[in-house]
Amino acid sequence: MKAAAFAYARATSVANALDLLAAHGDRAKVLSGGQSLMPAMNLRLISPELIVDIGELTELRGITVRGDVLVIGALTRHVELLKSPDIAAHAPLLVDAVAHVAHPAIRNRGTLGGSLAHADPASELPACMLALDATIIVRGPGGERRIAAEEFFTGIYETALAPQELLVAIELPVAKKGSVHFFHEFARRHGDYAIAGLAAQASIDGGRFAGLRLGFFAVGDRPLLANAATRLTGVEVSAAVLTEACAALDAELDPQEDQQASPEMRRHLARVLLKRGVAALLGRPELGAGATT
Amino acid sequence: MPISLQVNGERVEANVLPRVNLADFLREHLKLTGTHVGCEHGVCGACTVRVNGEIVRSCLMLAVQTNGTSVETIEGISDSGEIADLQAAFRDRNALQCGFCTPGMLMAAQDLLQQKREPGRDEIREHLSGNYCRCTGYQAIIDAVESTARARMGRTP
Image 1 (cartoon, rainbow over the protein chains, first blue to last red):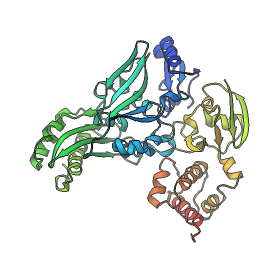
Image 2 (spheres, rainbow over the protein chains, first blue to last red):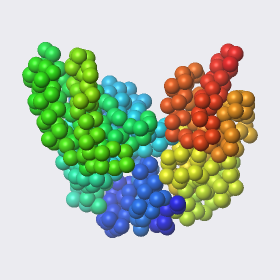
Image 3 (cartoon, rainbow over the protein chains, first blue to last red):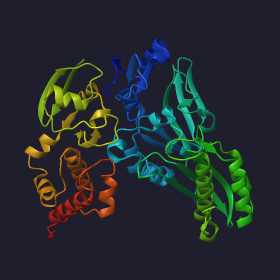
Image 4 (spheres, rainbow over the protein chains, first blue to last red):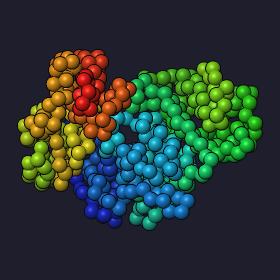
């Protein structure tokens, strides 16, 4: 199908975009890469009255390192994350994750800010933001707000972003020396929506997790930073400890049913991901061996 | 909305409604019907074109967003001879039957061959994973791209 008619405004600055959003509120939609918004409009799932195109706001582009913080502009495209030496050096988890996002032609247009603001629970990047302890920077009529990734995602396609606000950038702590990451998702076909996935970032000291952040996706109405990680931190991880952590994870999950999988299947896959992830992060394949239950 | 862009090297000035996507603009306004419209929500890849040298889904881009850009369609890269060898390989290998997906396949395949001189079969598969073909079963398409890469390296296919 084709999108319903709408009015179109090409924002000339962030201030101009905010003025437009302030005037039109939730009747307006921000167009960044359009790779989620355009399908939804073509399918007539949404019919905004006004499209505010922020595509030409170069101030929202770019990847910079400021001390031990990595700042990524909202309009940074997936392909730019994939090819950036700064991302490869300081947030390699994102490189692994982006390779799973759709297909090259989509990654040439889709943006980080767009993906986060869209907040599809099956999407890779929101879970990465949890794993990487990101801060999401938004600007609105009242100035700038800094929102922890854990507070940002509030439900299916729902975020802490108000209709008058614009997501402008994200900040990530630079990956420390000796930190490790893991990314895996189950999908019917590479590039399809994940059935269940895990983005994890960890630091290891003496064979134990000194820090562990587990960002699960497609297993609930929003990405989940699993508390089960606390059971694995600072202790010698044995098969029994891992089994306990799996049980703790199971209690945190609230998977949805859809045409791809039942809640039980998603719970199963989340446990498999946890075992395989922990085994890979610790470099102890025996922990993930036979991780089918 | 007035827009001004390059299409296959020629300057185009047009007035379009905001709701018109790039695929429909190319097909209906410019009569460049080599760009096909399949799913209209970014899944099938039949509408793949180049904008500023990068492949995109023309059904997921508004015509107004192409203001100031350079767009290349299958007509452009076919007429210039850029992909003559790839097209010949598709024909030789029976990598098309009905031909609906072919313009998008060629666009995506050429994009890969520009980025990587000799991709493996898995890389070809991965790069074309966003393009549906309902006739060939894909094997012949992979064969055609692989043999084109080899031929461009100066090897026998």
